[in-house]
Amino acid sequence: MRYGLKRATTALVAFGFAGGASAAGLEGAPAPFDKGGVKVALISYISSGDFFQAYQAGAEAQAKALGIDLRVFPGKQNAAEQREQVQQAINLGVQGIVVDHGLPESLGDVVQQAVDAGVKVVAFDVNLNNPAVPQVEQSDHELARLALEQAVKDNGTSFKAGYVYVAGFAPLDRRNEVWDKFKTDNPDVVEKARFGNVSDTTATSTADQAKAAFAANPDISVVFAPYDEFARGVKLAAADLGIAEKLKIYSADVSTADIQEIVEEGSPWVATVATNPAVVGAVSVRAVALKIAGQDVPKQILVKPALLTQEALRQAGVKTIEELAVKVPAFSASDAVTADWIPAKLF
Ligand code: SR1
Image (tube, rainbow, N blue to C red; front, top):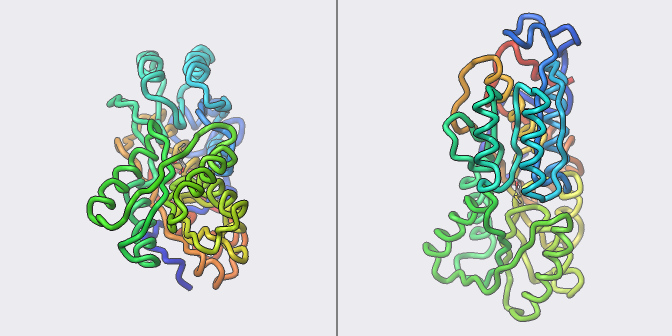
């Protein structure tokens, strides 16, 4: 069975972990994990939506397996609050912090305070430009390239497009670089409308904007919406306007709810390119654990995404992310930042 899968990684399927730590520590692990009681903070900018919930679940599972006391600071799309949370984490005496998204300008100095206080920091999808802070990312350039290659396969190189983008988020900015180059390389792809919103109601706000864009540009036939909440919004708008059959949506990310929206009869959501966010959460925690243990962590940690087309998902009869992981083990795997003392096995 093929999923239009272009990249494979191996080693971990992250829906649960065998073995793991007791309160007394992790046998065979380096200090301080051998004794237990390691405190780490997960500080998010966004917590709502399938991607971020699954990311958090993966981080929690990996933390549990390592005996880490993970303090989760929920994200409310509030830069001032996230900044305050970094300070709270330092005051709590955590040994590590994972910063998940956020605005670099509001985090740079507090993250430096954490580093100066000896706290190990890892960033996911936020460019903190700090040599002490490795960054986890989902190979966003490759992700966008795979989605746009599929768009060309389905639609050729001449079409009117809608594009969903909000500047200032590292993954969206990286995907945008690929979109810009794609338009330069394909001058008959015309971006007729650009819109987007990131908030606690991203999908519905994006739907409202998409409706206005479609009303003003009825010739749009392809939408590049490289965030699953964006794609849901565009799909919602298409359904409300009754134009789903003349539209094709290409996105990023996947969840069980997304799979159901993609495979349903008449869905315009024809492809997505995704990692398993639970694996990305686990990788982020492993990275900070390695740093706390004084072990080497690369500056850039990549989790490779896979192309998932509507056609392949339908053919395989996949309905949930768990089924996806079983049928395509490589989808849920990352061998990034592993060590033999880190438990990372399914069940
Ligand atoms: C607002 S940024 C949204 C993106 O962050 C993660 O990288 C997910 O892939 C999502 O698309």
